Image (cartoon, rainbow, N blue to C red):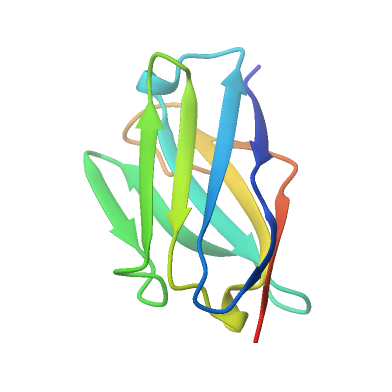
Length: 118
């Protein structure tokens, strides 16, 4: 069973940056599809970036500001977030799928809070 643990959230002023990390155990990251999702208060969970089938797709709202990356040796996934806006405030979740070609929603972390003040 894959376990995902996020870290790196916090409070930041608008225009600032944060880097989220996701550590995986119980599986090999290189064989999974990966993604980051977020859920703001009163809203449904939405995808931020997904990486599967050989493609990386960013939500329009974060394109050009957020970057996903991974370290296979460390079994870690990252989300670099720059030029943060108050509307980026949400709980951010790391997610993985069972294969590189499947949508990354089989395994979830517990989430990390990101708060952007204006």
